[in-house]
Image (cartoon, rainbow, N blue to C red; front, top):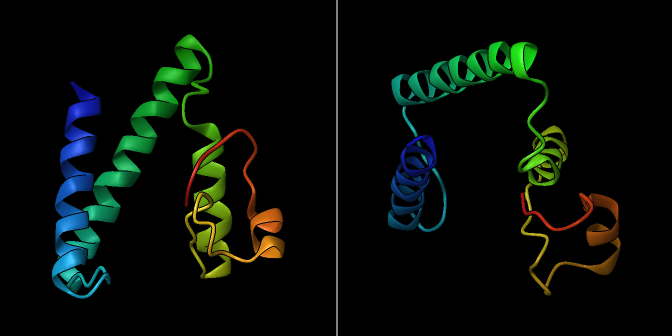
Length: 98
């Protein structure tokens, strides 16, 4: 299932990050592969949505990620150590983390 494959990729990236002190350090080839495949996944979702309508699952989390990446600052919105102003500014709506 797609959900399991995404969970596996996330777990592998998290493991890589933990091995480097919390930073996700990817070489150029791995970064290109990851981003190319992420784009392919987006393209396939687009094809699906044109036929079947939009998928709203995870939309709040994706919006939080988009804002975080655009700012160059990705935060866990559930982290109580994050300043109140920052949480308010990046809040994606009902739940979600970036």
